[in-house]
Amino acid sequence: MPDPTQPSATPAFLQHDRPPVPDITVPRGIQPFHLEAQPVRGRLIRLGPLADALLTRHDNHPAVTRLAGQSLALAAGLAGALKFRGSFSVQAKGNGPVPILLADCTEAGALRGYAKPVPETLASLLAEVPAPGAAALLGSGYLAFTCDQGLDMDRYQGIVAIEGETLAEMTDHYFRTSEQLRTFVRLACDRTPAGWRASAFIMEKVAGEGGIDPGLDAEAQEESWRTALALAGTLTDAELLDDALASPQLLHRLFHAEGLALDRPRSLSYGCRCSRARLAGVLQGFPEDDLDHMAEDGAIIMTCEFCNLDFRFDRGEVRGAAGRA
Image 1 (spheres, helix red, strand yellow):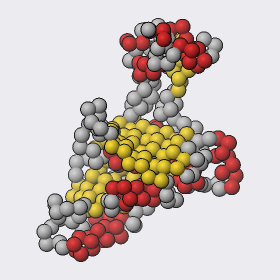
Image 2 (cartoon, one colour):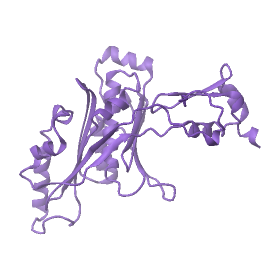
Image 3 (cartoon, one colour):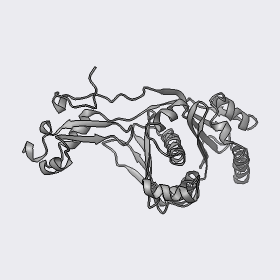
Image 4 (cartoon, helix red, strand yellow):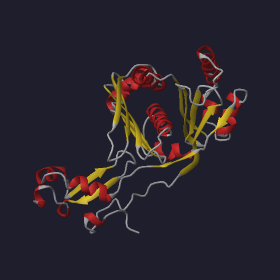
């Protein structure tokens, strides 16, 4: 079977080869839940072996890998609320050692992402701080949450300044200031004996009357939310990253006395969508002069940032925008 990353004699419009990447699906990656008759709903995200498959595509420092894993779990958790075909992405741009952080997930659970550090700047930081957190890695900049509802719908994007020490705190700042939504977010990512694991716990206070006991006045609803916050605050990274502790079991530990109701789980999968056809189409949009400058030793190398694979195109077989006129 030919390697799709290598040059192909097949015309670009017929090239649909996918790269040799892992075929991994986690059937119960997202476990939604709610507390019956209370203003509380949420989602528990466990990436399992999918985290290791996604994160080990890049040879990053563990601090950068942890941040990337947290962003993947966060994107999956936010996409888990989508009720239409589309995707949700989390993107951070800053002036720190990791100026670009991106993760996105479709409504079907196709997950991908990457962190792009600046080696020299990262090395300087690590010399002073051996285990830097999100704030030190990202620096000053902005955090963008984008909901893409497909070709026929407008994209919705919320942007806030990076504020907080952790990615969870930055996310909470976004929801409080842009969405005016009360949330609890906990993110975890670390290397375990089974490989890298990542998880997210996202809980929201429901606004309005739907699904809430009519006997609960505003103060009673507030008390229910405070109780849920206190229980969620007992979560540990070890619990979130433990493959042997199933999501329903973990949620039962937290909320068994609060009317826990589990909703239908959703799957997560390895979701890089690159292909020779897609990248060939990108190249064909460049002018011929630009393609000449991109070529080295008669070939153009394009790297997929998500799966970190190189695709090689013979310069003589790529026709740019001017070449098609």
